[in-house]
Image (cartoon, rainbow, N blue to C red; front, side, top):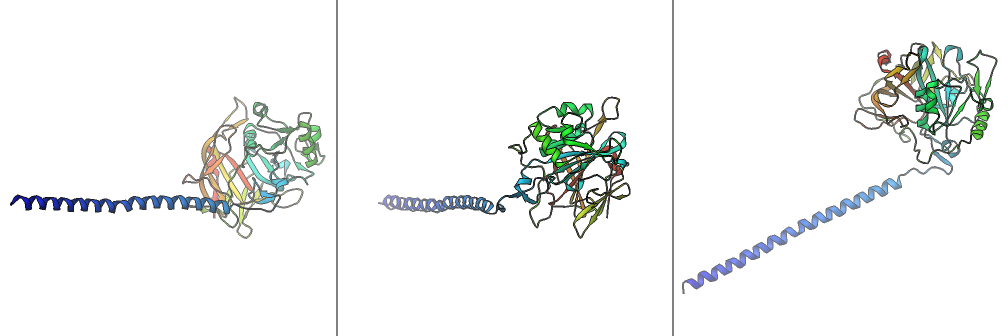
Length: 369
């Protein structure tokens, strides 16, 4: 008789324990449900963010687009037509140049004899009757022009550039070939070789004769990244840069920042660099310094500048300068510029001037307040 209450008590205790376990199991269920709800909220938030991004996609007036060269709004007739890349002489006897003020991007790089040569990338050039004076191309300029998918306009080239030009990566109008008679003309106000010029009409006719398309390649999406309207580039760790000297000894160029206009005005040879057609001083919103290794072709003075690979540089705008790293994947890749955090930089909207500087001469660069 004494055992029955004990057994009964055990059974009651077991039922209580089972009931307790069941309660604990019930209590754990909402945790799983909360996790599912959280995941659902996360998915909903991601969808909303994607929708918001789609909703904030810029809508421009019909027939307008963002320029690949400046980031500004331009007509599609201009901004979605391939630009021209023009080789320009920059020795003392060849300045001032004509039409250069219309260039949206300008490259400046050393050539033999301690001189520098320019390449202008033009988007809106239809009104120009005189562009030049024209000079010959170099290997590294052939590689750089390709980054903009242009029609390349030049008066000759060094022999070492021929293999690079004889490819599908270089639609060119060459002044020393038969097409030159269509595209170029000479003036009598300067001695050869500083008096060769091209006109918009000549370039258009030459491209038509060569069968070149004015449509960008289907996979071309532009060269630079630009900030949106009303925004400014990220310039963390910037130093003052009101006066900028690339350090070329032949033409001693200087960029001077104007805080009111927000641009850098260009001087060389001790005086303002102007467009001979308009008399206006050249200016730009962005300056890029790209430090590159180089060597000479065999025992000649001709340079082979390594514009592919990667190296150090500077991005200069708004009176400030930051360190950057440039990277170009192979001969025909597009050069990208990254800040010290590894992010691709965004440029101010406007014109850009790129200085290719031999690494060993980077010590000649001056940037100060």
